[in-house]
Picture 1 (tube, rainbow, N blue to C red):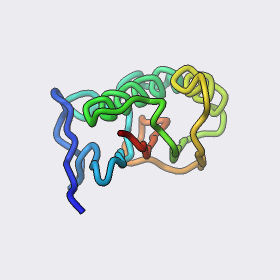
Picture 2 (picture 1 turned 120 degrees about the horizontal axis):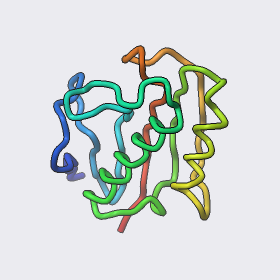
Picture 3 (picture 1 turned 90 degrees about the horizontal axis):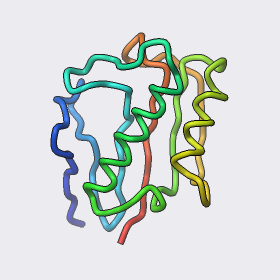
Picture 4 (picture 1 turned 120 degrees about the vertical axis):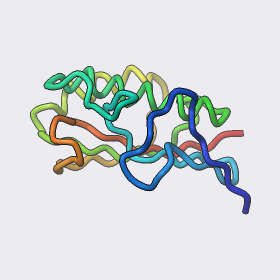
Length: 127
């Protein structure tokens, strides 16, 4: 099986030993994506909706770089810092998946950056 590392132009250096995504057999595995700028600083501190939009836009860019679209996403893993933000995150999430929704799970947990309120990892089947 051949695999291709996916790193969109302008991507900052990862916080740990990983890449934004890997493409293998027409499946894109998108790493957990935090609301970070190119310097790995959290953006939109305190605004879960804006952070979710930033995360999903980043995922969209990664998937498009691999040759797919958000319609190709089949599964999302969602991590939230506080259930109080769940409704706001879901509202933004629905904007990125207006048609058939991907399968997903969502858990509450601590995130690697204390100001981050949401992290999402995705799987997309393209081609």
